[in-house]
Image (cartoon, rainbow, N blue to C red; front, top):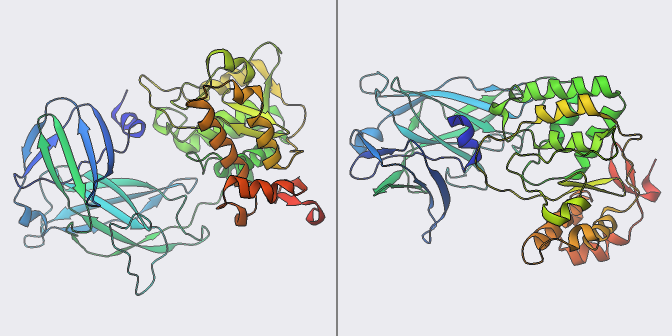
Length: 421
């Protein structure tokens, strides 16, 4: 597996700055885990092969470095923003000549005068880590889909670059950062993120379906499936192929960005042979197995009253992950479009209750899989309701929104019957 894929599969590998010994531990392999210590500081640990210490300049020298940033670039779908910069010594004007770890943060909302967010504030700042090359240059790609942006125009966002601390104990590297970390001086403290590129409606809907990879939501999947259904099989397949290219080529470089495509294919198409079924995705996402699998022919998706619920939780894995393009080949050779578009016929709360009480869920392991499935299904149902219900507990939502007569509208989602067009 190549290194870029390995980074995506594990927690982002944070390689920050040196400890008082001024040694940077570089690992050729291993794994990472992170969390928050009792003192409130964040940390990452990486374990693997024996550390190879590399001498760095004194910390006082590192903290005097300055940062020069280039104009950021965003991808074709407006999902990711690439930031390129370099570190240099302001006393000599020359870029550094060592591999310097650093942390970069971007404020998620547009810059305004008087902003007070600290760089360590995880509620407002998106962070990632990297290290420079020997020519002083570095680059990072940020997922900006959840940023507070007007997608039709360029907006200015604050940027932070900071140093951290680390300690090496045996074969383990522990790095941490907090509000005490030293910020480096930037040539400019804001960056202008460009407006999103213009894309057609089909690509927009496909992209919207992928915005919630880590908290699956059925509603954008329904919209994308119905829009593709209207195209017919040939054009729908072509649109999905184009979407995979826009995500990053449809190969392992786009791993982690294609989860919604696996789901859309299962719901939009049906095998010609009624005894055949889609292969289970081997992409480190949870799926049901054992005796229960026969209850889930679209594993890990299940359709209830026209709503595509999903057995959804993150898992680890090893080996080479499967890409969505392989399932698209199965569609080309063995599938036809589903007979009709999706038309949900039940209030999503009621549909979730039906599913949770069915054999599909009740046969799952009661100690682990079943509670996780029920929680995920309920969250998915609540995500399809009006915003005022989304922060409420399940019992409260079930007693209120669960009693409403809701109908599906392809533009607005679920609406109360008296407000339907």
